Figure (cartoon, rainbow, N blue to C red):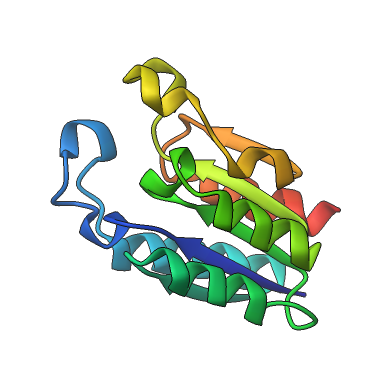
Length: 141
């Protein structure tokens, strides 16, 4: 089984950006944590992060016929990107939306998620552990 782990804008700044919300763990640490769990599960994890919406759309499309699931933290694109929604719908790959914090407890604009309509599950407010939950969920499908 192969799972694509996608991270959107500013997630490369983990450990630096608003540590009171996102913690002090770096993006590299997050990838290592996910890789450890993937190895434990016998899953191949592929990582991609971009601050550019089109690059994320390209990564989703390139997963077609190649990956069995997607874990995506779209970052701020959660609240703005119909393009990511359409890409996930187009490829039909089971996708789990992950958020480190709980957007529903933050600013009002963060309550809207366009991509959620195409996802099989949403995990929010569980910190970095949410990525591992998403990985395990996709392995059980």
